[in-house]
Image (cartoon, rainbow, N blue to C red; front, side, top):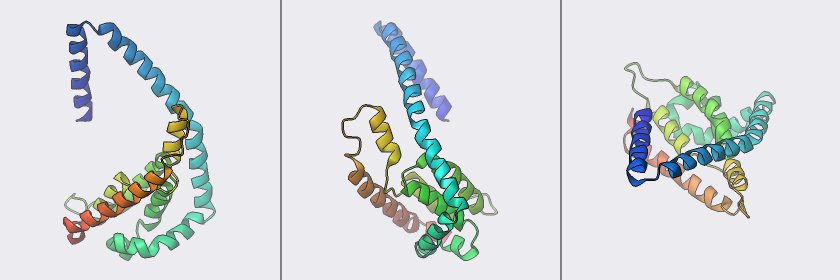
Length: 190
């Protein structure tokens, strides 16, 4: 679906550029935008590699298991069925740890592992814990927004860390709202 929507947007952009006489501007914007995207992606690559490596060391060193034990009282409340079965608790904890550290790119493969462990119900629909985990993944709590700071630094911000306190407050607020809405709107009954 996203590919179709993107295709429609591109076609509309090209048609509008041709009719308004801005085809050259569209071409220049596409080239410069692509160049900037590659530059930003390459500037984020070292940070991603570093944090993915740190997460692997933390996992192998037992730090993530300790973090999982620390989070277990909260996880029991938020993911009751998963906590009861014990299946997927470590995966959820490691994904949350990566998000709390602000390294969402490293959290993605961890979240995919957690999603596989949580699985679907026998009828193919998502269970309440999977729905809640997906919502938290869309609005994860974050103490150290390293990706945001790196993007701001790569974009030439004079103070890339100026948004850290706002990100912390907003991310935790959105996470709590996501959990509450998941439970209110029926996620707790599934």
